[in-house]
Structure formats: structure tokens, C-alpha cells
Image (cartoon, rainbow, N blue to C red; front, side, top):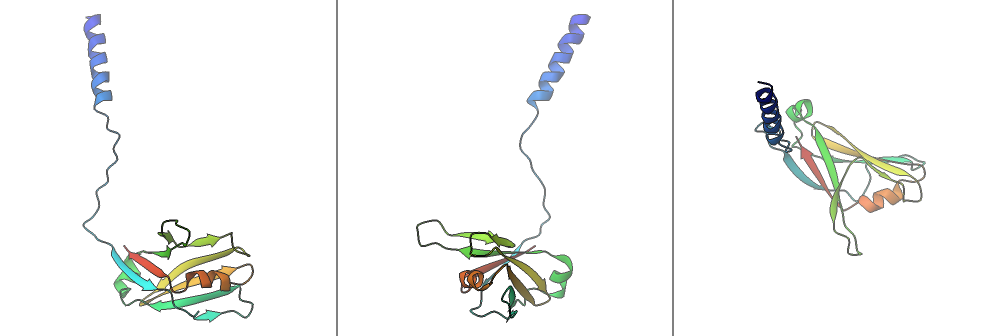
Length: 141
């Protein structure tokens, strides 16, 4: 009887271990993301006199009241390089510690528009010069 109990315990333990699966799965709703590609304008919408803060706004008709109330928006800026590094999308908010002054950019949005704000310990002009004319990808989910 003792052997049967030990054998049963070993078999149950073995089946338990063998049935474990290391894959993680998650079910998603049947929703899709809307992707909008924009271009960063050549001029700022506003800039403070000390040049430590500025922003630009872009009209985005895809941001309806429904989107504003029930969705989130992620923004990515296209990064390209002349030295052979692969181009990529970088998500906002972004911090830039390699510039002359620490700088940051971040996204806010309202019905029908987005605003990208830029802040710096010094001038935001260097940061904006890196961004202007580049593609901006919005993912609305």
C-alpha cells in the first residue's frame, strides 16, 4: 500500500511538471489600433522668451470626442542617422541628456489636435532642430 501511495504521488508530480507550459498568452478584444503619420512642423507654435519651454501643435481630425474620452495615444518620432545605424521609432516622452543642456519632449492631446511640448535647462532650439521635418507616428488605442 505504501508503494502504491509513493508511486501515485510520483506520477501525479511528474504529470504536473510535464504539463507546465512556459508560454504566456493573453486574449485581446477585437479592437485595432489606428496609426496616423504626421510631419513635425518647421516652426514652433509658441516659445517662451527664455527658450526653456516651447511647443508645437498639429491638427489631428482622427482624435474625436470618442477617442479623447475612451482611448490612449502613444507618439513615436522617426530617428534617422547618417552613420549607418538603422533608423527607428523612439517613443515620447523622450529625455535628451547628450545635448548641451538636458532636454525633454512629451505629448498631450485634445479633441482634434496634439501638442508636443519641449523643455530644456537651456534652450529648446537644439532639440527642436533635431525633430523638425521628421515623421511622427501616433498610435491610437
